[in-house]
Image 1 (tube, one colour):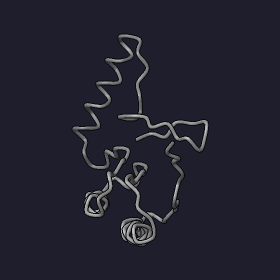
Image 2: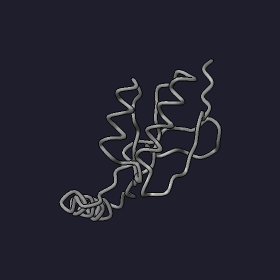
Image 3: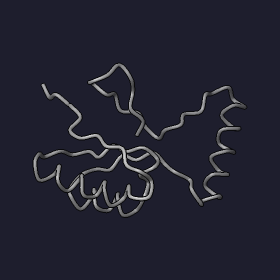
Image 4: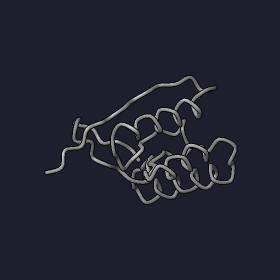
Amino acid sequence: MTVVKPIDMALFPAHSASLDLILLMTMTSARVSYLLDLMDAAYDAAAIQDHSQALGHAPIVDRNFRADHEAKAEWSREVKRLKFIHMPASTTRSTISAPWSNASTPG
């Protein structure tokens, strides 16, 4: 039986998040082998995802629309379509069950 536990967790101020997170991923990878980097939308940046993949990890990051107004508008239209057919909108692309809690972790 495989046991899944969180290895590191960090909260960074927005202005230094990318560099700090890249350093944390690198240091953690030197100590343990792991496969997934689970992050919220604040870390939806190409540099972070590229570094995660370079380390051999699969980055799971919530989408952050930032300046992508076309994608944000499309998501808004999708939510309206789902409401029209009485289906609740999911705020995530997928859900991974977190074995260390009773909650689900968005991914």
